[in-house]
Image (cartoon, rainbow, N blue to C red):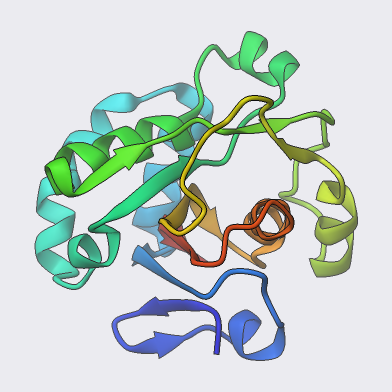
Length: 186
């Protein structure tokens, strides 16, 4: 079963959907504290919160081994949102992950968001899927080994629509081993 594993449990969205990725992990559930952390990172650019990544990994011991020997690919922002926000929190997260894993992983910013989609926060599952359909492509000239394991990185896994849309593109491009990793789940 494809899906996000959090301390040995699979979420209901993962049990009910057939995703294009093989498996996934998250660092923490989005309780009140987790939501605040993600909000600070995503909407306020508080990159400092990622400094706690070292402490988080202690609470989820299987997380770093899950990332080893992989190419970590952050979910991209559309160029308009990137200009207005000034940063991509998923890229920051992927950079922190690569730093912790070390030479057993690498970072590739190989995906591009070609449609400026509306925020997913108020959409239900079907609206989220439709919102991100056709929103991503593999950047031209990308030369990644198709046999390598790809781990898509995002801040939050809610319904999985965004990560699944990215995984679909990678599958179409010939990548066979695709996983996802997020900070929060909920």
